[in-house]
Image (cartoon, rainbow, N blue to C red; front, side, top):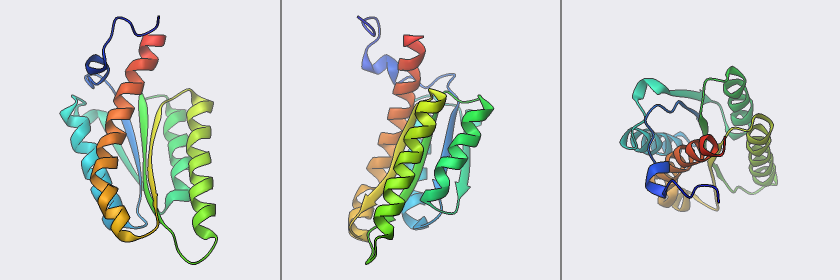
Length: 154
């Protein structure tokens, strides 16, 4: 059985991991908090600040291409996607949410690189505010755990 020798706590050890973070600037109040929470949690898990690369892009639709550029460098053990999409009155919400999510997944599968997707999609700003810190922390934990799991699986 895979993973029998490592517990969850071991997989949350970020020492020697290199993590790339792509943050969308749209809804910046939310994405700044997402980024602060993710970066803080990465360091709490042992990822050295010099092993974290933060890239900022205009919006959620631009996140996948920046993730792809980082993945192509081959310097990262995992990536994190940060963004915030809040429903408006038009179909644009669905387009941005669906296409950004599909792009993140495609990059992850194409490069066999774990990407923690914390592009949050909400109905309104209060929902986004309620999720911003928790989702940033979760993204960091997912990135570290999956990087370690894939290393373990060889």
